[in-house]
Length: 153
Length: 102
Image (cartoon, rainbow over the protein chains, first blue to last red):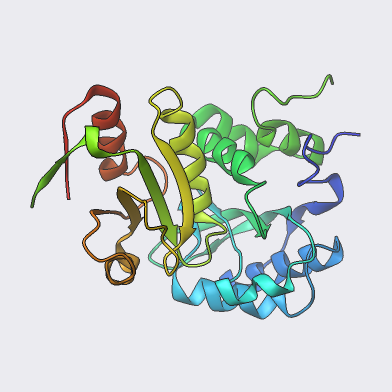
């Protein structure tokens, strides 16, 4: 049992060495992973691309957080996150390179703490590097585990 | 540009399109940073900004929609999600007192 304490990010939802042809291919694969873990229906995937077209979900430090438009929320079955670690960085527009995607499916607020943790990790160069270099789902989950909710591992 | 005193700010709303990703992340970060200040931080869809918001933070590209959805409310815009100077200024002002330029 090494999922995050809140159950939003599970080991099955973390993939490494993913080959993406471009930004949209990466977003599509993020969506498919959310479908695979039962978080969203197929219709969520195009809504993620739509959102990406409106405003980039790149947040800095080589990370993007793809998710749907407001209209796509109706395809969410349960709140969940998924992590895609890309085999090689892809161009995310405006000269930005992304090598890690944190895909989001959410109806409510439960993922607020994990995203706040992600922001803190990315603002700390050492922890950001650990996240990019992680090779196991356990490591990724440990890094994103909100403080104060760490499990006894 | 006008300055609003931070003592007037009880509730900050971070607004974005779906209220699912970037705004949630920034709201979470601000919540942690402003934990002991008594200021409430929430996120919302830009089309559904609560009436009791005292200050709205939103991405540059959504500023017009935010102003249209919440006429007369002060709006601070940012461009980057991690460590944007405009957001840092708000945090600093809330913690130390003073005014926020909007």
